[in-house]
Image (cartoon, rainbow, N blue to C red; front, side, top):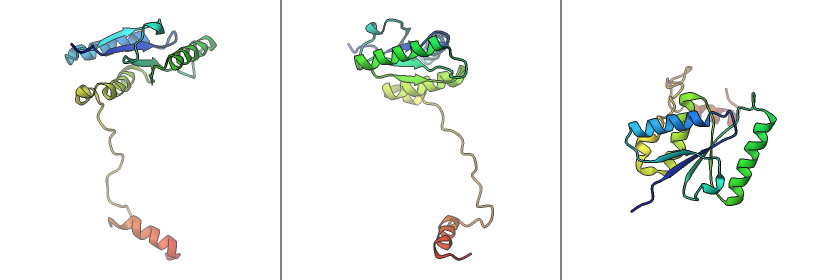
Length: 147
């Protein structure tokens, strides 16, 4: 029987790791994805094949004690050789970032977990000429010194 993939969520105090744990559990349950999500404080309980998500600090409001704890968590994970992903963002953005990290470790669910691609900002034709070769022509003229 295959081992169930486990997701360990770590972070300093006041990083909303509990909020992320609950949102992730809720999302996975709704999608019928059988992954175990657990907030962890004992790094020794984490296995090398667990997915480890570390809630990043908000550097504008973090205290010195949070910074120290964050550094201790990172150092402990690195010392034990455990790979981890740092998750930033608030609310749904944080959840989307966590799902993106999970998709890399659980490719069988990537189609469900992956966020949609960012929208293209501008798709119109060149505003001065509309020629698809415009960029080539522009750079050719720059090289030859013509206008």
